[in-house]
Length: 177
Image 1: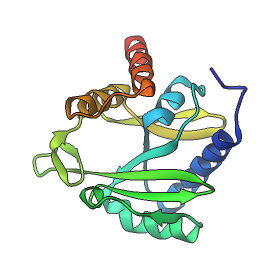
Image 2: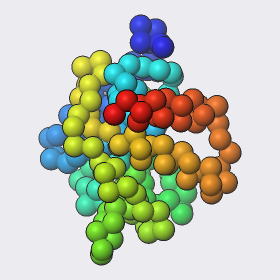
Image 3: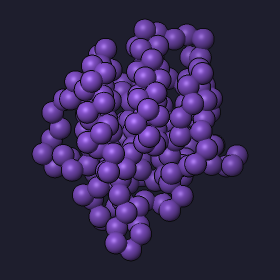
Image 4: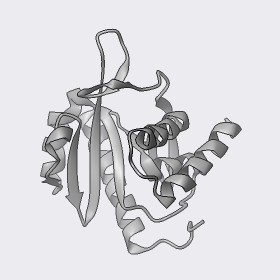
């Protein structure tokens, strides 16, 4: 594990995540971590270097979130046309941040906004917070994180080495719950 071996990128990402957490609290919205940082918060330790920060919030929060992040110096980056209903990408201090947006269908299923074919687990949004390096955030359920990795493979995304490692860690976390 690299807990004691931070590099500048890791420290900057944690600073940005802390700032996003403070902004979210100020405007009264919840978000959940997903991806590699979610795994690290579930474990309470940093397992690897991360390329970016992946977050999830409700679609209703989009406008106020975008406004507040812009005020705080975050730059919106271009998103592919097919993802525009689902996410907003930002960059600050060379840290890439993706906010994905969720909603509920008319019959109550949790889905990624604009992607009704992928129904999320009902227990995807863990209510408790997890702490790492003094930062407290909510994360997606490890079962949802694992399901996400498996869905990506089923739709043809080639697994990366970090995906295989993440799946092993997630299986272990799930076993211990």
